[in-house]
Image (cartoon, rainbow, N blue to C red; front, side, top):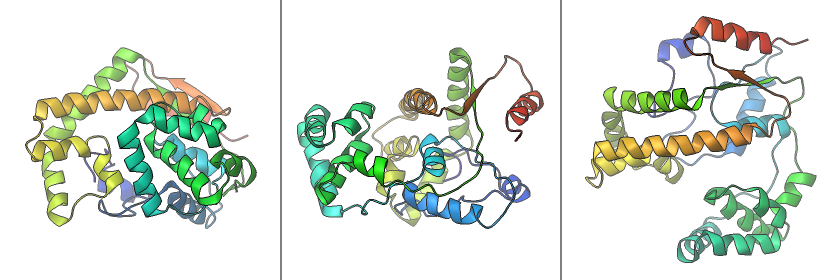
Length: 263
């Protein structure tokens, strides 16, 4: 999954010794917990400063704050809760979660099906609210000093960049990439539902035009941007860097570098 994730070119990955990419196949399940374990293991092998770069604030938060040692998911119970969601809808599902874990239900964004389902699943498995687990059992995987910097564009520029990236994905052969992956094996659930890959499969199946897919991907990306910006705002240590119109990558990198200087 290279084009749809905007993965750096292979030569650049090797030059910068970029780690923790291509950990599993598109047909495999993966979890934030597994990633945190692998990241902590890698970090503990060196005394050098490490740079986390990416667009997944949840993984960053778990790396800095810790992860909860709750029991692994139960496939049968998960399927039962998924069916409940589809049958009764989000509002009813939230009512059930609010009865057993009002703290968790109150802080999850609308449409956050994955975490809503996980919250009810954990309570059914353990008899304890997930919010209790998070508050009392969280284990921090790394010690040290951490600096967090996030880039921010003005809304019109962000919209332009989203549109440009989606168009570039298709120009660079995104549908060919998805075709090749499907020829190898079907997508796993999480990968198959991800932004871009879900729409590409619909195009290849003849259920959506490419133009409609591009529009849908842009809409979902904008929704993700809003969620990520809100999520990042919960980091007390965050430093926002507002990208200036026409600013060169070199100047922007220099400003980010200043924010990342350790005392």
